[in-house]
Length: 179
Length: 399
Image 1 (tube, each protein chain N blue to C red):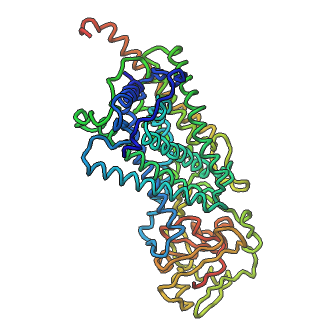
Image 2: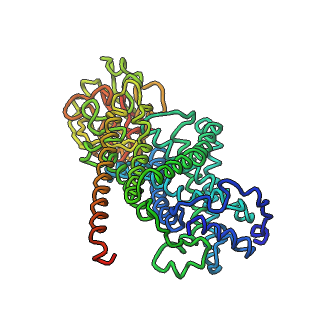
Image 3: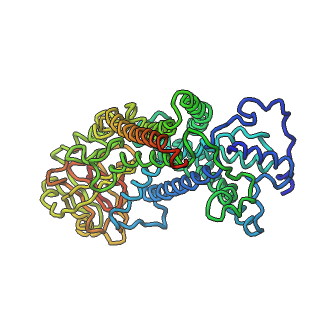
């Protein structure tokens, strides 16, 4: 059963059991005190959220709400509509192209590579910096990214070689050990 | 409570298509236990980033009741270094967390009750704010400004939005976390319908493998960037915007003399330092240099998360203030030769103004201060953001 199935079960339970089954929103079947604590926490969170929205919409000269709201929405859309489907597509291709014992290693190395590249994107793309100040974005980032990713994939290769040896050995000795 | 918990009519089943279909998401990584564990890590990271961000905000804009201590000298280096480091390490954590819960975006029916709808609505500022904070932070430390808002103010207000939505999220999801994490979780499985199911067999990344990969990603990001603020590790920086030993006199620069428009004024032989107070006086550059007899080791600690150690020589600020007859409880303003810009002057409260390690520095590493480091004189004080270490100082006045 996958997480999705669990969500399914929840949706069905919600439809069947009626009020109170919305596990996400209701504090659950805890005591009244827990319920109160959860409600107060949520209220505190809403207060902070409102404070932030008020600040964002008040200091308009600095925050430029029109532009900052566009960026806020664009971030969600870029993630939900572009990034996740793209990652799912890569996962689908990997499941066709990379055989079993190695696929997990390739997936892991891709997760590390993608994260490192994303966290340093403006650097290796050369987006940032200030003209006349060589101390900002001071390093050869394209080369450095290649060094880091090279090390990541070298480690991944070592793990794959290790897995290959182990699977061969277990195939040879497996029946004797009763695996 | 009845009103918000009342069942809403479900949309017709024939609309349940595409990602809304049952079984549309097959990855075994869409799992409530994985989501809970990643959520805990992400909560710690965002909580840390929020707390250290507040420190930085209130150091630069102290409310009336608050005076920051000047010691320990390394405090701001630590809080701001950790602020940027946790933000960078949050990139894989956030993306992984969102992956584990992505099918929830397409749950069916989209809303079950008013309470469910409200809970789903507060997810929007949470995800929007989280992505926004990481993206704008990464852009800002690289000094890349593709947006048309002022970074610090907007980052500050969106931090409140994000942390507020996060607290609401924790309140609504704490039952799911309790049912899926911790030793007695089996006994708490009845709290919610979202309970982790046994992991199906398969060749792809397992849940444990996913956690390992995400942790490794955060580790690699930290290992290749943290040297920008950790003492002695400056040479290990590969993917951070600054290397602490790169720059004129082996120190990075944030605002050059040319960018500040002070080139001519700073080199002017007619330069005078004016100290205003009950007994005001002025010093020529030569007199200021002759008085520069105190030497301290203090880091420049930038809001952008880098810090660099340096040896400064200059005049103790407290000696100048006492000569001018400025009382011990007074706040002073240190003014730059810059004629414009938000950081052309900074206020120095008594803890910093009276600290014997606070200098108007005229030498760096034994050499006359480089123009880009604030020649002829700059402020250097312990435990103070770099933007407030005013350069090209020509006036100190009592407020």
